[in-house]
Length: 395
Ligand code: ATP
Image (cartoon, rainbow, N blue to C red; front, side):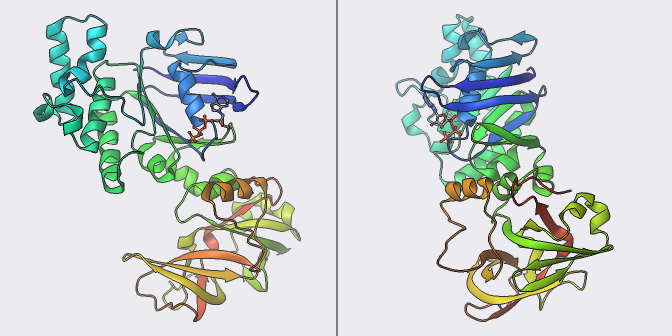
């Protein structure tokens, strides 16, 4: 295993597409790093440059101690697991796993030993003599992993390896990949567009947008301290509610106007986020996670405000209710929110209905019903603030 370092790595395709722009990433030895972002953000291109499958336009790529910009893929000592598993249909599981070692003319006894050991790690021992077509999707996926593991490479590179599995299997394999990677301790770079996969797998997660790295941090930090509106809206499900508000300061007392509703902010807020002072009397983009919105009739007796609305829709998920409603404040509109809307296919700026659509995560004990009056308790200690033009977090 080895560290992988990208210093100012860029990729411009021959047709002029700037797919990756000056990417800096330091991936530690043994680390599991996830590259995540919407379709077309450049994550696959970044991974393929590390693998040596795509030429680097500028910058430096270091694996271990070596700068490998000009080193061909086969000499980089990294193993790639693809979305389509690329198994040989006519070979047994044993030969599929051992194939790469045979190509390298490794002694037969050593190949057999490594294949057995790899199969044991992946719970494939009982299937070694089967052909891929006689395996389940999850087992095929493990064979594909086996081919990578058996080579004992310096790094694993994985490109959406779970996207061909059904939802339940994906959750199982996610846990499996995490377990295997920890057991082997191999530096891993994993590409996905699925933020839940990114959050559950990564020691750190790198979020990309249009070829540019937005933030790289441990999952919880991304969730709690997103650097900008894009990361805030991309990480979390249901997504963070984003709405325009006006901040008013009177000494140390702060209020936020959301459409026709006025919310008092907690007394400690300005000392926690001193940069908010610069926004006195100005508009800010306000971020509200769905869990910061609860049924006011059931809410804890702590600091907060109550918003009133009408329930548009209730989605009962068993453990919680997702309650949709609108408030009469202006939606946030920046490059980031447009990019997020493009990704989800949901247009935040549906001009036909005034105001901003919101989602709250209620306890299943809530009596919220569609079409009825709604009182939502807002935990004002959990608000996020962003510059309404640049989208950068205000702290
Ligand atoms: P996806 O999740 O859809 O695979 P991605 O985030 O992995 O997307 P890339 O495949 O790296 O994104 O593509 C980044 C950008 O480069 C996109 O705009 C894409 O259209 C473009 N691109 C990818 N491959 C080529 C190529 N061979 N020639 C020109 N442009 C390309």
